[in-house]
Length: 350
Image (cartoon, rainbow, N blue to C red; front, side, top):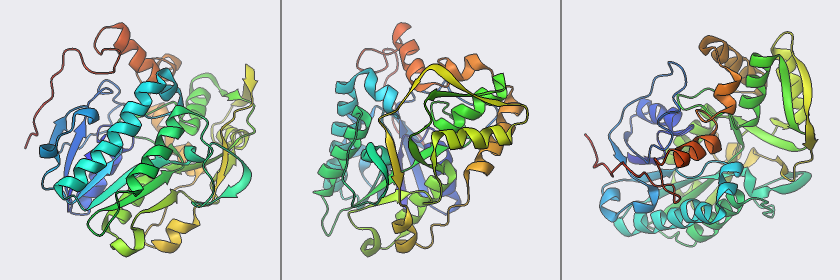
């Protein structure tokens, strides 16, 4: 298939693109490249034809000729979404719905949206399925809910939307993020010998490796319409739900000579959800997640040692999404609407 991947230079997108190519798909990327300075070590980036453009500025012409859109672009987490809630809704919600509308108008048949288990928000301790009520507690989570609700109304015989509610991601990527719980805990352990918790460690989180998320996108892309049409899927493994303190314990067991430490102001986190991921494996048995948290912690440990990661790297603007955006704003490289001041949209490059 001819596939457009929005956010292809992001944390997940840069892992997904080579996987799509390996499966024989014709891939084009679209990205504003806000995080082009966040390359991690010597991780290779696969080059594909691409459009350098803000997702808010996509046109019908940009979307012509594609069989499917895999939509990952957006403000990527809760802290970044809190920076400016209005912009979060503009980019994550309004631009996403507009993208789906344009896709349908131009004849793109499949639209796979990178949603989130953040939709469940303050979900409590019981296992949540795709039919459980939404209870988002952040602009990021609310934006994902709104996209699902609006885009699902576009579904018909010619347009097949699918919503992948990813668990909290982890794993090594060419555009690594350290504002994700396992990535962050391992980074603290490697650099300070402390597994440093900024909350009280009680909330539940489902977690999933970015390679398994990418595999889910590939499987859904290739699935028959009747198995996926206008459906949501929790992406992960049901057994990979942990309290944050349990993740800390696994990291401490993985990295010798480390101890768990809580921040002085560590308190409860409203985000608390425990997710049942059995639906995707029942509907799509081709989806076979390969990773678990212990193997993931070891992968991160090895990668961090290889690069020689420092606290100022992962707590500073290079890899921390919100700090990176604030630095670009302070330097005048982007405006308050998070648009490049000096860059111009680039045409597709073949």
